[in-house]
Structures are given as structure tokens and as C-alpha cells.
Amino acid sequence: MDPADDHGELDGQPPPDHAAGSSQKRRLPRAKAAYPRKRAIRACRLCRLRRTKCDNEFPACSSCVGLGTECTYQTGDASSFDPASLAILQRLDTLEGLLRGQAPDSIASNDRAQSDTSPLPISEALGSPALERSPEPVPCYINIEAVLGWPVFGDQGLDQRIDLKSLLQADNDEHRNPPVMSLGEDFEISVADQLLQQFLDNVHIYNPVLEGVKVREYMRSARFNGLGWDAPSCLLLLIYALGSIATPYEKASSETSSSFRQSAEFRQADSFFLAAQKRMGVLLCRSGVIEAQCFFLAGVYLMSTMRPIEGWKMFVQALACCQGFHNYHRPLDVQYEGVQQLEQSIYWTCFKSELELRLELNVSDKSVWDLTYPAFFPSPPSGLKSQGEAAWFFYLAEIALRRLGNRILNYVYRQKVPQNSTADMDDATANFEDQAAGWLNSLPPTLRLDTNDADDKDHAALKFILNGHLLDCYEMMYWPYIVAAVHGKLRGATAETFARKGLEICVQRIRKNESGFYHRHHGTWLMLRSCTRSALVLLAAVRCPSLSPLLPMTWELAVHKVQDMLSHWKDESRDAADRLHIIEKLMVSLGRTLT
Image (cartoon, rainbow, N blue to C red; front, side, top):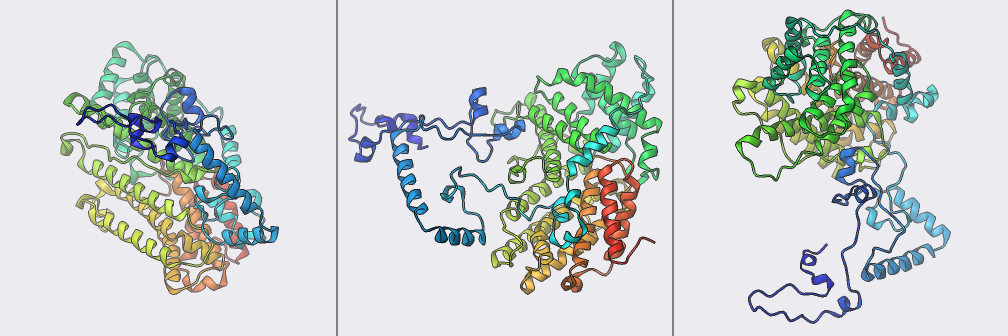
């Protein structure tokens, strides 16, 4: 919309001439006189119902993205268009009619020619009446189910094994009635303090979205008045639930996941969580910081207990709460600065967690196309050194990697693969490598990834997580070359180099994550998925004789390590058990078994 519209120029009124003070109207150009324009109504259906301003982003506006709802625009109704727009549409219809008047053979040849190139922008896709993106899946999706659908596994009958949601739903049915430990009206102060400290040491350090001072105020109030049915009480119960099962990174338990679910720690944690669930209904109609914190921590607990679909729902609700308060154009003052820091922190944390799960779960056909992120970084608290300098540097470094990962995905998902490597793709990949190197060089000394973790046990867990996210970025940038190689479409020395790097990243990911294979935390399920995906990619390459020269020598050892990892978690996560069976079957077909 032309800015002049705000002054009425598009309605036939020129802007006022303040210098001359004249109110005379300028003579309108002939086109404007013939087609007087007015402001068009283009809000999506939900924004119209809510009477909120719509930014008209496609395929989904920011309001619908924040609420996690489907965004639809009214089509076929020209009543809100002005005469100029109607004339343009009429001429476009005429042009489309001429294009459709071509011989069928000509149209078919044009369709085939277009299918060999990248998709046209929506504004140019005149052959599509709905002017929408094609619903066909992009073979470049980076997840286990996409890999299982590759033709190289066609003889294994895996078509029915790619329904992740059914596997996860089966897990939900089994754990619908977990063993519960009864809780009294109150419990020992020392127990509460211990659970809070375990939460701060092993959970909060990775997601600094709470104020320790505020939490201790809530605890003091609960000691005098008991736990209520309000947001602070819900938050305390979730902290106690996470504190009950949180363990230090270097002390990961070796017990199986099935024995964990019968343990007193889990029974206590789930009792706290069920008590918190009863209070969440009160929070649904509110959009404050503490409400967002509650839903986020509920998602963390569900992820830590291998319930990813339910965890994603909680992250979506937390993100919806954030949409009610993130307004960063307000003037800052001392009183509001602390509130803004909390708002930014919880918003970014919810955004990262929801996006990571959304990409793995494929909850929507269009989800992978919506990778936009906030333009700001959260502000660190005042007195940074006294509040955990390394933890905040870790938090900002993790956000920077998420932004790099989104830039890579936005590029990769636009590619039509498998296809021959192009110079543009090679240049883009080299540029992404430079950005990753720049990120590495920007890390503070306490978080340098090239130092030995044994020398710095205090920050080993932070480095472990950053290393995992960095490997994710490398996997993303090399993924088109992996897909092209497995499909027999790899051409050129540069493309072969990137494909080799991609296979090396698969082995490196498994080796780097091995120290966290049996550690329960927010990202355990995502780690199981990424390492399993790497093992399947290696097995796909093994089944392609032409890729033998590109395979790392230690690929078989890496796959065996993934088998051990999945075997540990198979009793708690049905998708882990199913993927373990697939890998075992593929290894047997290659004449290799776990010894």
C-alpha cells in the first residue's frame, strides 16, 4: 500500500500543501480517474474474527503462527477489491485463458520443464487456480521418516514404518495411568530446597527463564499459606517435578528406562506434575510471563519423560502466551527493563523448543516453510558475572546457532533435490561453512569447543549441547549433497567433497553425543532422533556401491553405538524400539550383526 494512502491521495484527495496553505486539488492522472482506489481488506479469517491487525504474511500471518492455528485467506470473493484491482484481475484472467489455450502437448511439455527447475514464485504460478504451494513433499526433508522413504531402502518394506505419530500415540496409551505417589498438604522444607537446587543446577542453567529471587518468594509464601491454585503454585510444582528427576550431566544413570518408570523419583516427579496439571486450566486464559514459564516447564518435563507430542503442545501454548506481551517498541525504564529481559528470554526459549520439535514431528505440511525468528537477542541480566556469565553466553550462543540453522534450512528447503550440484548451491554451502567458522571463533574462552572437556567439568554439559547444535547446522548444509549422492545424482568434485563431509558428520555426531547417550534431559529424545538418522544415512550409503569411497572407515562402529543407545531407551519410547529393529534388520541384510 502506498504511504500516500494515509493522506487520502488514493481516494482522489492530494496531501495538504502546508507551505502554500492551498486546499486546491491536483488534477488526477487519467488512470486514477478511471480506476479510483480504496483501501482493500486483506486480513486472514482469524484476524478478522479477533478484530486484530493482520500483517498479511503468506502462507501464515504472524498472529496465526504465534497461536499455532491454520491461517486462511478468503478466496473467490472480489467484493472488497477496488475497480483498479478488479480490472487487473480481469486482464490476468484473460492472460491465463490465453495460456490455457495452448495445445495439451505444449502444456504438458511446459509442466515437465518447470518440474525440472525450482518452483516458481507464487505470483508467477498462473497455472495454479489456487495460487498455493504444491502439496507434494520435498525430498530434502531432514528427518528419519524422509530417509526411510528413500528408494535405496525400497526392498526392505519400510513404507508402513514411517508413521511416527502412531508410534508416539501408542506410547501415550501405555503411560496414560502412571504409578502415582501420594503427597501431603506440605512436605519438608529441606526437601523443597533440595529439589529447587537440583532444578537450578541441572535444568535452569540450560534455559534461564526464571528469576531465582522470585521463585524463592513463591516458596516462602507456599510455606506459610500452602500451595494454592494459582500460577506461582503451578510453577513450584513443575520445578519440584523436574528437580526430582534431574541429574548432573557427568552422573548419567545406567539404569534402563523401564526401571526408571518404576522408581521412587519418577513416581514423586509425576505426582508433582499431575498436581501442576490440575492448575493449568486456570492459566489458559492469561498471557503473562509466569503463565508462559509454567507451560514451558511442563513441556520440558514431558520431553524429559519421552512424550514429545505432548511436550510440543505445551511449547505451543507457552509461545501463544508470549504473543500477548512481546512488544519491544515501548520506551525502556528501570522498572520495565527486568520485565523485558524475562519476556525476551522466555519468548526465545519457547520459540527454539517449539521449532525443533515441529521439524521432527512434521505436525503440518507447511511447518518447515515457517522458519522466521525474532529479530532481537534477549538482553542479559544486570550484574551478569554474579548471575552466571557462562550460562548466559551459552544461551546467546545457542540462539545464534538456531538462527544460522534457520538460514540454512530456508535455503535447503527451496532446493529441488535430488539434482545435480550447481555453482550457486556450492557457493551457498561454502558461505554457510564460513558463518559456522565465524560462530566458533566468537565463543568466549569458557565455551571454546576445541578444549578438552576433562579440563573444565563445570562447562562440559554446555559445550556438549553447543557441539550438538553445531553438528545439526553442518548436517543441514551438507544434506542436499547426501540426498543427491544416495539418489545417484551427485556430479562434480565440489559436490563429492561436500557429500564426503556430510557422511563424516554422521559419524562425528554419534561419537560426540556418545557421552550423553544415557542422560535424561530436555533434548534426549531429539538426540535419539538425530543419532538414529545419522546411522540410517550411513546404512543408506553402504547400500550404494558407488559411495564406498566416501564412507568413513568407522561407520560400522558408529552404527553399533546407536544400536546400544536405542536398546537402552526402547522400553520407554516405542519409536526408539521400532527404529532399533529397522537398523538391526538392515545390518543383517549387509551380513553384519552386533557382537
